[in-house]
Length: 143
Image (cartoon, rainbow, N blue to C red; front, side):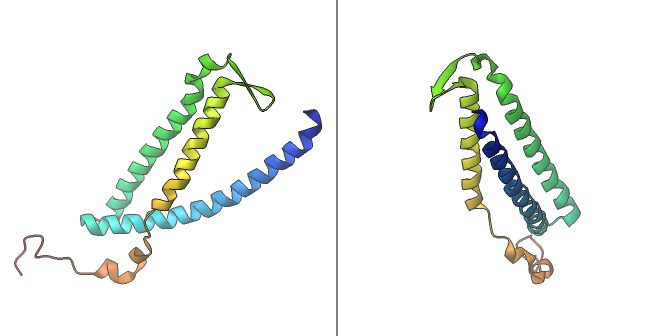
C-alpha cells in the first residue's frame, strides 16, 4: 500500500546497510581464508604457492561465474509461468516470482548451512608449517 512506502524504504536502507557491512567482513575473511587455503594446497601438492594461488583462483572463478550465470538465467527460464497468478497472504503473486523467491531462499539457507562445514585453517597460519620437512621416505627417496 502507498502509506507503507516510508517503511519499505527504511527497511531497504537498513537491509542494504547490514548487507554492506556483512560483505565487508566477508571479503576480508575470504582473502585470509583463500591465502591460507593456497598455502595448505601448495604444501600438500608440493607445488609453488603462486601455482596453488592460480589453481584455486581458477576453480573459484569458474564456480562463481557458472553459478552466477545459472542464477541470473533462472528468472528468464521461468518467464512462461509469469502469467499464472497465485494468491498469497492477501496478494496476487506471479507463480514465477514465487518460485524464484522460494528457490533463492532455499539456496541461501543451503549456503548458510554449508558455512558450518568450512574447515578451520588457523593451523595453516603457523610459520612452522611452511618450514616443516617433507616426508622423503614416503616419496620413495632413500632414508
